[in-house]
Length: 260
Image 1: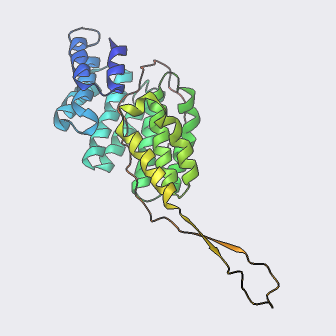
Image 2 (image 1 turned 90 degrees about the horizontal axis):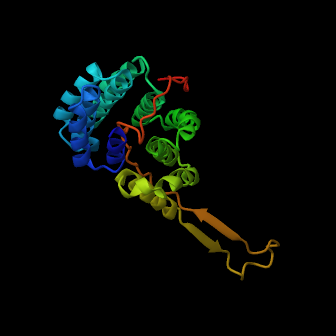
Image 3 (image 1 turned 135 degrees about the vertical axis):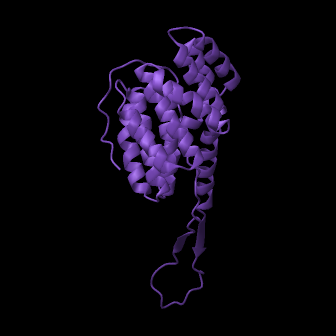
């Protein structure tokens, strides 16, 4: 049933996720895991009832098994992100990392959230460095957790574009937009569209020197290339996703340093 809930989340089927959470909540063993899923369903990627989601996720962060307590705490940080309370989000990320048995997912998503905070502060290069350091770990778990990997690539594409590295941004978003998840996650499609717009805005104007130039000019007529710089475009940031595609139980990993 947990696996079914993960699929429902990845495809944004919130009504199904809510129903599965309620069924899990009826069991003694998985009661607060069910509360966790109900909180995610209420959150609806930031467009739902944030107060109700907060109430449910606070219960899960207190009473669920350790791995889910960490993830519920991280999701509480996502609520603060949607509310614009960046400092509160950061505190939730740090708290999630202190939960015993916090797994690779919590560590990667907490660090990704910090990278997005750097971006909001205008430090896009530092955000790129943070995201690039996470890439090998997320890629290692990509088969079991494609949502986590594609969210990271989407954020990396956004930050590459902010730094003017359009070709690298396009390369980062390409596997994301070609994935089945792109059909249900609008942020992926929006990032790809805006990167494509930046590419097309780099118009190249060719100016030829007239062939009837004075005879005393020894050099041949040449072609001048003038690149029209694109106007800066602010790409939307994809907020941290609350849960992974599959729940994998593993020991904590030593990921890249958590820097601010």
